Length: 398
Image (cartoon, rainbow, N blue to C red):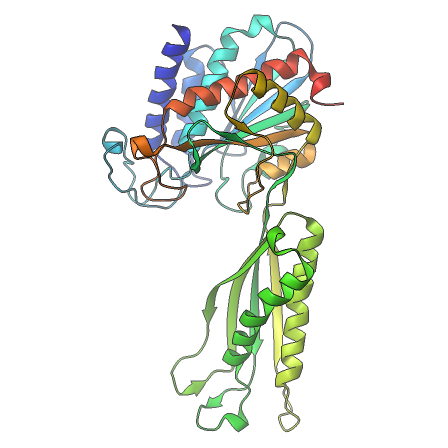
């Protein structure tokens, strides 16, 4: 009966968050809704990282502390009306919870309510972190850490709802689980002129084309193609079809599962560009071609702690969860990685894809939606991990 009441409550919360989404670093109303929701059952909270929320549930005695994190921001996407979302479609034009963060908030609120009711049966402490700005670099995780969000925390766990994973299926793996994100820009300078006299020019567009065709192949020679992706997303240069421009800019991105591979690919870009400059250099033109390469490193590789992950595998198997504890890592990135650099823990996926309910859209789609049956499952997963950790921390951390 209690779980049924809890399930209805978290569905209502999820729909409320979905109706009123807010973009990264601007989650002011969302912050208030979270704090008010916690206060409904007596749990006081405070702000963190600007628009985030943090709250502690104290157990019945001394013990370790486990943190549970939810992200809270939405995306700049105009939501499409579907057969399902009529009661809770976004009221904010051009803003939508298209990545499941509304579900994450509802799940962690459900965990909070459940554990608060049971605070007399476990030792230690559970910290709830509602983090702003996961979707926009530099993200809110580092702000939470800088504001002391992990002080006194011994372990941390997070969950992400995914639209391309079958409903109810839980996926994770030990070690690298999500990739680092790295963007780069290249300014290639040649010598402009008229297309009818190419002998007087060094065409930066042709050099950019060489870079695009060579970089991926060269990267694949040095880094296992299954361990990285590299692509180009934008090219800008020129003013007219018959004018060779002086310069062109190229923008791209690459992702890896190891920092060493990140360094290798950055070196590959530099090597390919140096080769191209030499190939296009002209003795009769004093000012040879040149380039400027700028690499911006985003979120780091997300690495699940092997010991913690093994303990969760045993627990979820006991709970008869539909589970893949050796799932393949994905090239998506997450600033939860910063927490796992500070304390042991793990990040896991919970599937919401359900063709029988016509829930098949992937995350970041304008028609993305959640099979709300997974919300209570998320509560069960995170609360079970927290309680088991507090009961037997030695199974999870040294």
